[in-house]
Image (tube, rainbow, N blue to C red; front, side, top):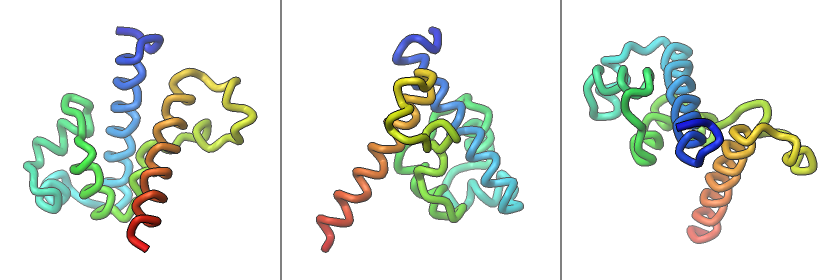
Length: 117
């Protein structure tokens, strides 16, 4: 599996999300155990999320994001994913995929807010 395949893109995005989880946990000064307890999983599971051995489900990522005081899209953000749309064609395919995922997350949050009002 390479970065040129759709599954390669997914694996790279998973790795990026995993590294952002570890970054956020350390930023908050939390242990693996404390974060696991907050999310209802073991510290071993958090460790597996952070080292990329297990993928984080959308629901679990939402719980973790809330506990870590981060918007879900923060886990997908990269400097490249925040570029203006006119530069998107010059982006690396991975960065473009991350940007598309970020836009989808933002769009779904907008739709949920509109439905709730």
